[in-house]
Image 1 (cartoon, rainbow, N blue to C red):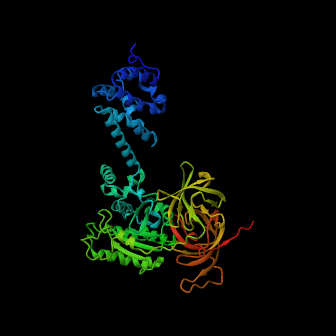
Image 2: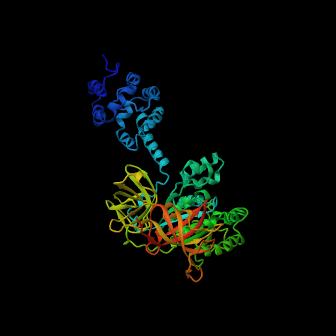
Image 3: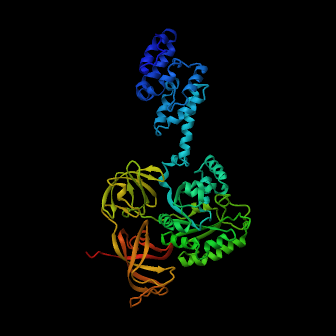
Amino acid sequence: MDPRDTAPDSWELEEDAEAPAAAAGLPTAFAALNVNAKPFVPNVNAPVFVPSFLQASAVEMPPPEGAPDPVACMEVAETVAPVENGGTEADMTTEEETWEQKEEPGGGGGGGGEEHLGSGGACQEGAARKEDEEMMEEEEEEMPMPKVVPATPDAPKKEHVNVVFIGHVDAGKSTIGGQIMYLTGMVDKRTLEKYEREAKEKNRETWYLSWALDTNQEERDKGKTVEVGRAYFETEKKHFTILDAPGHKSFVPNMIGGASQADLAVLVISARKGEFETGFEKGGQTREHAMLAKTAGVKHLIVLINKMDDPTVNWSLERYEECKEKLVPFLKKVGFNPKKDIHFMPCSGLTGANLKDPVPECPWYTGLPFIAHLDSLPNFTRSNDGPVRLPIVDKYKDMGTVILGKLESGCISKAQQLIMMPNRHTVEVLSLLSDDVETDDAAPGENLKLRLKGIEEEEILPGFILCSPDNLCHSGRTFDAQIVIIEHKSIICPGYNAVLHIHTCIEEVQITALICLVDKKSGEKSKTRPRFVKQDQVCIARLRAAGVICLETFKDFPQMGRFTLRDEGKTIAIGKVLKLVPEKD
């Protein structure tokens, strides 16, 4: 009985039955068949593929010697197309390498199989090639930033700078971020064209650049950033991490978390008539964000006056100067020094004008374009020999516990033992990723992802801190602080509750006692205890948090000693920790 008429019990039987026929006619093909079949038969297919389509296809299937004729191949393709994992026998034997590759990215083979079977024609090479292309496409879909990895060997030499984009809602922060990533080659043209098509379908064609940073559906539908977007780009001298903060006032807590990781803030202002004014009036986010950035420890501020290409502005120097005149006094009041800390520049996020190359339409601006200016900034001084301090911004589960945060001081290396405060869990660092590139050690100022051993993801909260075992950070509930009341309608008395934002930690606090008032000009402290404080006054107060928090005094460790107090969606006060009060048990 001819073995081809019945469904064989297993693949091996079928091959053995055909062997004599092949040996008689085609010794070379027989040798080739053998090589192909040996490593592959027992391996992947035997268990998986036997039941699925033997009944359908074994009848018409040509014996897999050499290349089967295209007609037979097309028949098989038509009968088998609906099958899930449909690689025909002929494809299998020649496709060892591609299958091996397919197995790795998480069994993407299933869907891939159907598509290339339908193509019929030149079965084997076509299939292998198409499968490779599909793999490439799948990977590109998932990873919009494929071009950073090659720079690993010289990565540590570049200084890491974290830049946070802040400003009023719809000033163009995400668009500028997306444009910078495109200009520095972090997002390829094809991805952007895809975003542009999708944005056009939603009638939002001017938003496509911001989609490079606003990745989730809600942010894209509404055109508003909610979470702090992260991306990175490199210039000749530095490696930048972009933190794209939300501008909407409902998401200010997220913005504070973003600003607490930044070394440098870019305040984006819309020059369009009406938009600048709403952003800067009392309820606008321009003022609040500039102030929060200062309290989060950002020393240098670049003010980008965006939308200069708008028809109402048209690169006019008058409008630029008008925005500048209104901003300088306010930024001065917040604590930035206009001569040293602030740099103004005009730009357009949508067209990319003055971000990388100078603009012909703007002869009056003589400074460097934005990216060149970032590159020319002086280096930040960071101490490598300090104790390890890494405030945690976010955590998730991924083959272990993964945490995200910016290393404020000290160095972390692989397999190092650290302590998670305030719970005092001992953890070990399994792997380190700095901006998605794996490294063995990290220096201060880098944005890290750490995979930890010895702690569950549920036991970590944002605001916890990784410390070196020999030098733990302080934790407690009660502390004395100097606070400046920025805006509050009525008076503030002891017993007042607010939300405290300190580094990445958010906790409810109560002002338990007002100790003294501080004179703004002379710095003298009042002798008597005040009964209340009101707007624009500076006082020293005792605060008590609802739970245990990690903090340091401002003079020991500025990044962990600055805080803001918020209530009812507004920032009420900014302050610094003067001393920690031990608990009375």
